[in-house]
Image 1 (cartoon, rainbow, N blue to C red):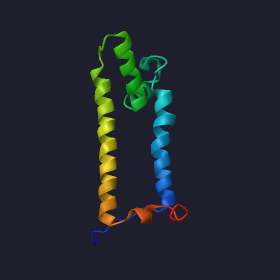
Image 2: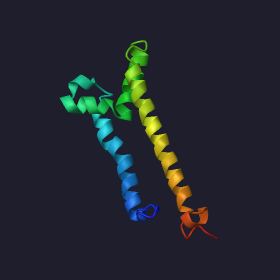
Image 3: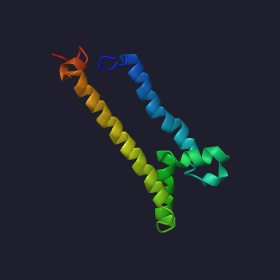
Image 4: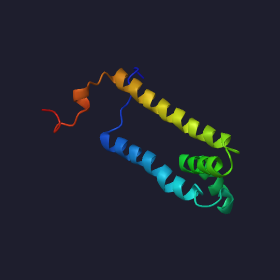
Length: 114
């Protein structure tokens, strides 16, 4: 390699962004067990749902509201981990953007440039 990074085509980036947005919604919400207990879901679904933001957020809210912050730490840890991963992804994208030397006008759609 010559040190240059390969950039995904626009339609592939859109598919990746849609998958990153839809997976937590389509998987995380049903498996979050916010309206019931995680123990009432099938074994892997209940545990996986607690590792996604909707499940961790719902159980953090439940722990805070009804149980005086009892067992809130694991849910805070899950949410903090997702926040750090998201921040790392944003920083990585910014570093990649800087390394390619792209300017704002190159990234703007042609219809928006006057």
